[in-house]
Amino acid sequence: MDANEFRTAAKAAIDEIADYHENVVNKNPVATVQPGYLRPLLPASAPLDPEPFEAIRADIQDKIMPGITHWSSPGFMAFFPCSSSYPAAIAEMYSNAFNGAHFNWICSPAVTELETIVLDWLAQALGLPECYTSGGSTHGGGVLHGTASEAILTVMVAARDKYVAAKTSHLPEGSEEKEEETWRLRGKLVALGSAGTHSSTQKAAQVLGVRFATVTVYEEDGFALTGAHLHETLRELTAQGLEPFYLTTTLGTTDVCAVDDFASIAATLAAHNSKNSHGAEVFVHVDAAYAGSALMLPEHQHLTKSFTHFHSFNVNPHKWMLTTFDCSAVFVRSRADLITALSIKPAYLRNEFSDSELVTDYRDWQIPLGRRFRSLKLWFVLRSHGISGLRAHFQQGIARAELLEAKLRTRPDLMTVFTAARFGLVTLRIVGANEDDINKKTAQVYEAVNADGHFYLTSTVVGKDKKFAIRACTSTRAMTDEHIQLLFAIFVREAEKVCH
Ligand code: PLP
Image (cartoon, rainbow, N blue to C red; front, side, top):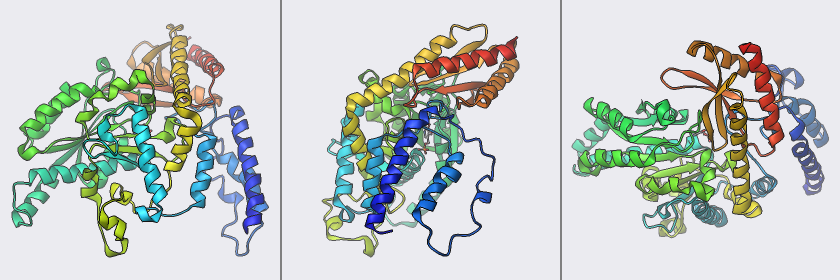
């Protein structure tokens, strides 16, 4: 394909993409194909000879589209959303055009410098404490990773090295004693999360080869992690000779959008850390992958007050902030935590700018070497929508969940609101004679609503008594109040079938 052929093909593709976005509002969210549907439709091996682009493009409609689940469909209420917008899509085109691995500043100075600036803008817009900005008093700053899972694994590596370094700081550098103590401690490390913490924290612990423990959360606390329960777990672990070194707290848990009690967690950890030897501290990460976007709304910014006591924070603009996947913004209070753990300088990566230490080399803030030009799409999104446009988008998602909650509460004979609308997520259960009956009926309604096809919902099982609940996330951009009315009508229809 030469440049002229590219112009023609790409313009046709853009028309097709715009048509897709215009029509996605009419599509049911979930693909209805069966497993293995694609193999019989494609040849057994790659073509030996080049194919015309038109033939390739035609296969998008005929073969790929049937197997696409439409995350932008207004009926998509599962998981958390994966949002996009035209400005983000255009930025991706430029990013592809400038295609590069961008690991050092000199690999494309604009890629590094725009990322630093845009993440400072984002930190400011979210009301994060100044310590998370590049010019802040603790030399922190932001970096873009692909996903929250990557962010959590990365900060856990930094946490491990920081903790072990502090615990062995009294031993002579390079001594056998220090080496032995380092490896003994590594075998004792425990990463912590709550029972509502996303599985990516457990996975990170699994990858790092450290233990993982959960702190129980309770319905009466709104399933939030509290300092009191954290204290209990810390006490039990330390009594066993283990070393809790890391904690994920969450702003908006995946199951019910709980917000952990940051102030009491900070107080518990201050007391715990003060008893620890050689200044070793539990490293605290705030996972705000989904709900963190809502911090753009001034009424939620009080939640960030305790973050000065914590070490890192992440939000995924690819979830709610209209920025095409993948884009996870990670902020640290001290960039040295990442650089100390992750910087390796083989001769082939050295250059005068890196050696001068006047530039940021983001390869030292992440696990992979190469990196995409992700800041471009976030920059386009922030400028095209403006903070006011994004705030309106978040407010709409929040208001629709409140509307759904209000409607659910009109039928207490059929259903109960399990957790109230919070950041665009409401969870519900169907009424029944006892817990088993409630779980059974709720599961039946859940299956029936998904089988209807208009909506795609996910469910969760929460708490020590394993309550089954239906999740409805209302922050997909194309959703309107009419979709909420329709969903409610389907809930009523299906609940009546199992209740009467
Ligand atoms: N943290 C929370 C609270 C989430 O809800 C999710 C996914 O929904 C993740 C982390 C993982 O996100 P990612 O797919 O970016 O790794």
